[in-house]
Image 1 (cartoon, rainbow, N blue to C red):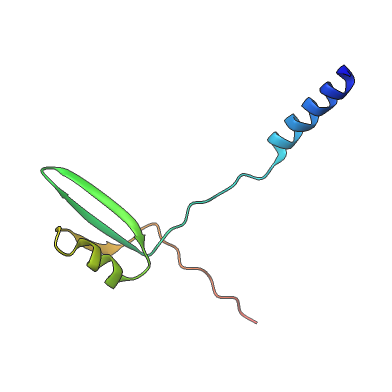
Image 2 (image 1 turned 120 degrees about the vertical axis):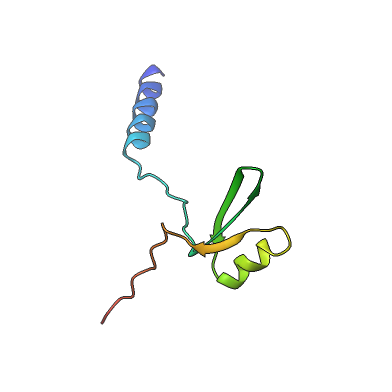
Length: 77
């Protein structure tokens, strides 16, 4: 019985250390910057400028291109 437990533990350890890391981070091209009284909030989750502007409309703020966004490369054939 202990042989199986040791083998299972070794397999889990091996899998945990050799599994590829998951990366769920997604970068979008537009950021909204807003805030009051010295506290500024940032939301870089917008795919279009119009979508960003609709979010800051009425609450104050402005939109700019996300400096960390990298457009996907187009494949040439």
